[in-house]
Amino acid sequence: MEWTQTYPGLPSMVPAIRAFVRGLLGDTPRTDDAELVACELVTNSLRHTPSGEDGGKVSVTVSVHPGHARIAVSDSGTGVWATPPTPDDIAEYGRGLLIVSTHADKFGHDADGDGQTAWAEFEWREVDS
Image (cartoon, rainbow, N blue to C red; front, side, top):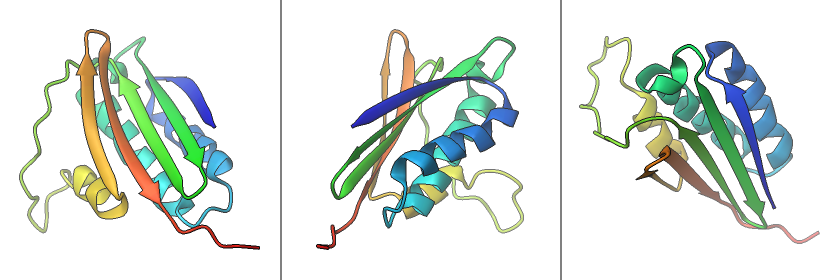
């Protein structure tokens, strides 16, 4: 199943986005990871693309299947993607993609004429009841 929700490009929307992801993943074993990664991807969109400017918006798509989930965050960015250098121990910023890569099984980035989408995938073993 797949659900998409579009939010105003405001930092105050991040808690609502976290709740959206948590509500859809329910009691899956990767809910905490997916919620954290969604927050990081949305924060990057708001901080580094026009989606975080006046009138901007960000869309979050959550796909859930047995043993698998995908979180995709779409924004109005240009598609230019550069992996930031490894932050030093006292850097205030620069750990977002490190957090994503640590908590997701796979992550990536797609771009087209309408903007860009950063996505992350999570897998788990289904337990028989």
